[in-house]
Length: 339
Image 1 (cartoon, helix red, strand yellow):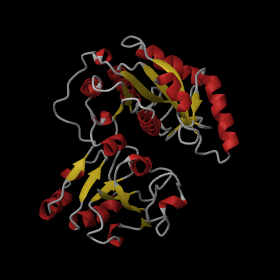
Image 2 (tube, helix red, strand yellow):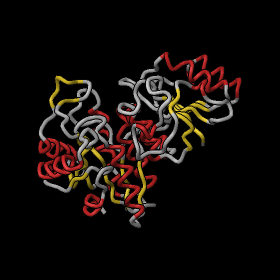
Image 3 (spheres, helix red, strand yellow):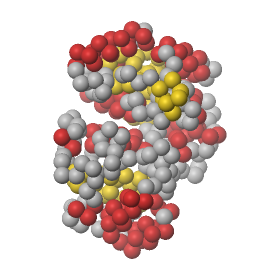
Image 4 (cartoon, helix red, strand yellow):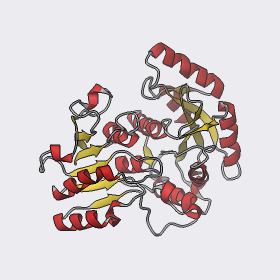
């Protein structure tokens, strides 16, 4: 599938969906749309993902060059920015499908729905959950697979990236591993999943459990994409639903080097790493003996490898478990205790 990825004013630092798709999805990236960096290339900013030119808008592409427009950013609250309307309109007029991970459903937008019908396009809102979800039965722990969940100290610290890297490297090492996608980025990469942050609260654990049961007897390892943080003032319910619904065997605690407060809620300081370990394990304990056995530290903000290595070592010491920056230093130390 040939995709254009919309990431206006956010690429690359605040476009984690775009970067996830460029790094892990099996798509041919034709272009990234970003008015601020148009004229440059993805590789000018991020060297280790699929390269593509950056253009100012969908109208800069030939109508027959792209199959799908993918919304590669999701602002806090998941709303639709009206400045994107022209790009979505142009894509539909070109006959392109549109994939969105917003809480605003493009398929319910009267203009977009009409254009899709007129031009034979599909609009896929991946954050629109199925209608047949139900409450958890508390049986995810009965599957044959070992269930490994990434949890975080905050949002946007690398849970999705860590999940994908661990699963990919586990498969490369000969293990039978699968990803359980719980958010828009994971769903766009894997092509299936339940968007847990859009599910009715009573059904969040059940929506995770359903996916565990679907895959758990067909694979040896399930790597569950975590969301949010157990201390997040807005998103902790999503984290709790995934934690209890997955009934994970092992937890990987993800953190960003030098982050001291919750992104977007800077009046809330992050607790100590040991506090996170105690919280995640004690909250999981009533339903599963989940244990934090490894850590992943995002050192993207540290330019020097030596400083990054020192930060990882300090994080491992604080955690009392093996740790790595999975992009910078690989996953071997983590997989040794997970698989």
